[in-house]
Image 1 (cartoon, rainbow, N blue to C red):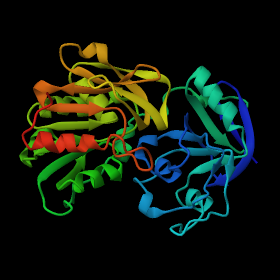
Image 2: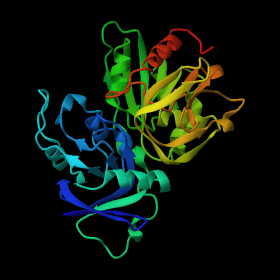
Image 3: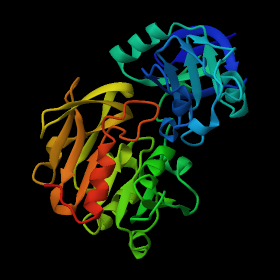
Image 4: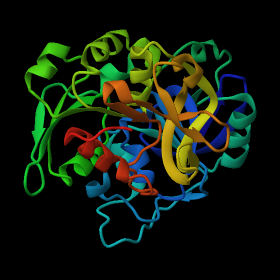
Length: 354
């Protein structure tokens, strides 16, 4: 028996899965029907307890080749866990994976009601516990401080291009998903992944053809040193930012960010291109958004969320820089926007954003 205790006092009773420990974090939900392995290994979930809205999870087991990084989430909540996966690529079941990576979990809870609660009231802190405590004050405050420092690489790593090398790209790793690296490699890019706080002069001394800003967890505004560093890089080489990279770029350019009520997490987020009028289905995982109105005269809003109108992408033509909130490297997920990596290589090859 286990309990999911929310900071507003609600308690959901269920059964233990995964690691037999207790943990607390920010409770969020993701609507993906597949891709639970990518969710579990996405560093952007650092410090969070993740609810899967799809009712059964674990049916295709554990496939290491599909991992995006090291697991960083604090807990896992599902309606039903499959204990007998069926997939020729699977090496174990999901319960064993959770135990191996010390991720506490709970199943048998009403994930539909949990999701409705977060949609109506907004994300909140929660804990997976063995007993219901008398006082939940320990769930107040920010439980995901200094998130990027916990997930960035510790030292520089080089990933060779696939086939003929065309470009060298420095990847600022704020918690990068592996498929960002693979997407660049497939386009002839040698990728040099560096720690999040690598000084600007060191980055530029590598003479990159472009700089890639990765996804990552937490409140973008708390990354003051990374924001300051980007201010010295943007405009000197072509820059492409994804997710947290999009937010940090906006802050470096003098803009602002805001926390969303329940965030966007899943593989079915519609995004409209304001230039062409076309709508794409995208994969997303973020709790903050850029306030595009704070960047008027600095950049141009290119993409918006078709559901709530929030900013999904910015172009900075004068700086040879563009950023998106969604994941063009999504896997598992829609691949409608993979062309953005081609846009980046075009920019590194001398093209323009016009």
